[in-house]
Every structure is written in C-alpha cells, then in structure tokens.
Length: 109
Image 1 (tube, rainbow, N blue to C red):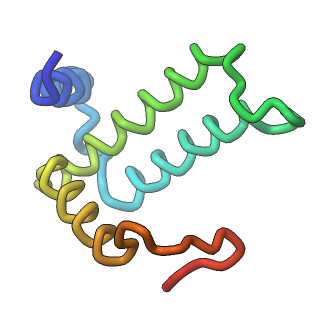
Image 2 (cartoon, rainbow, N blue to C red):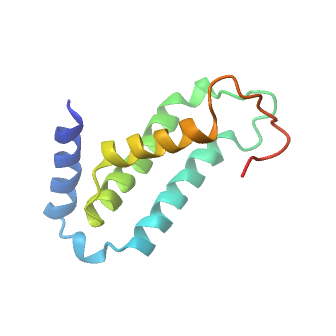
C-alpha cells in the first residue's frame, strides 16, 4: 500500500465515524502522547530485555496508533508528511554532520 493509500484509509475511517469535529491540535497531540506511552508501557519492567520481541504484535499495534494520529494531525494542519520529514532531516544533517563525535551524556542544543 502506498503512503497516499494509507493516508486515504485513515481519513476515510475517521470521516465514516464523523470524528473530524473532535480533532484539534491539542487533542491530537494528547492522543499521540498517550499512544506513545502505551508503546513505552510494553518496555516497563522489562529488565535486561531491551527489545521485547515477544511483544512485537503489541509494538506494531501501538506504532500504528501513533502513526495514525500523526497522519490525522498532519491532515488537520494541512501538512505534507514527506515534506515536513524531509525538512526536519535537513535540519538534523546540519545539527549532526557526518563524523561529529556524539556525547551520549549531554544533549546538544
């Protein structure tokens, strides 16, 4: 399935349920955060198991929920997902050029 087909499926699902009227920047942001926390919950108390491959189906479901809300938020703001990702990657290339030493104990500003 293409990205456009995925987007169309997401928006059709939303529109068939008349959910657009409940969508705004705040609530979509909250939903993204809640779904990200559900993903994080999979790893809670996992000890040394950093990958949780035994829960890959749940990981896929939570990632899908996050992506769905992200697509709906991009649609709400009339943003092109490919364009905003490309723009952010360009910023990251400038911020973190190839070969730059990474200090994992401090965050670069």
